[in-house]
Image 1 (cartoon, rainbow, N blue to C red):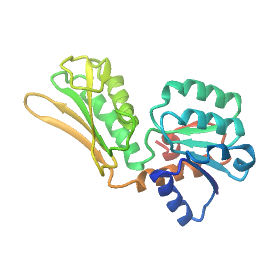
Image 2 (image 1 turned 90 degrees about the horizontal axis):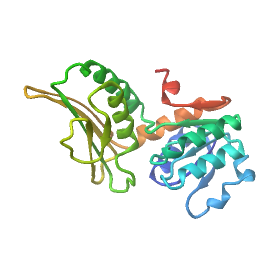
Image 3 (image 1 turned 60 degrees about the vertical axis):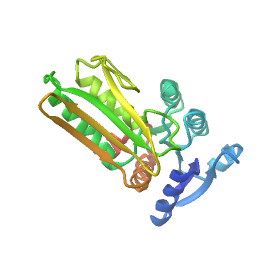
Image 4 (image 1 turned 120 degrees about the vertical axis):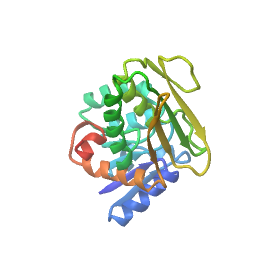
Length: 238
């Protein structure tokens, strides 16, 4: 598989390392210094593009890949206000787009566990649910995309919670997400149900970026020769 890496920071480098070890080829590396190299001539050398940049550039990069006819795997968060437009354009172009707020296999299993626990807790109104997420200081968006996915799952299943907020809250209708930035934390997410008699917690802690990078590469392998819009549920058969 020939891969174009759009974003060559720590995540892009981790993906490169795993891809090369698996016998894949990196044919294009795009970062802030050579953005103009994301063009039709260069992208034609690749089978798939993997995009990990930031919230301010991700949407434009995704749209450019769809315009150029290359399947794109996007792991950037903080840009989903434009998701509807990207999805519509992908359908118009008969393109291929796979997005996930987190590519770690463990996190995607954690998503399933979070949904299951929220359903179990639905009628136990004496418990209050709160969330916490910790990431490295270079993480630009807060709360994290993973935390937002977890929060939306809770909101879908706990009737008393109407919206999430990224601060301490005494409003029972608000799901509190506390964000902390500390190095070298790759990512920790905690969901806690508290009552006057006990607490129930589920926690996912990433030890490094290998899980995220490996999952993104797995997603890239999955979309080859496919058309449409996908997520990690399809990749993992969940």
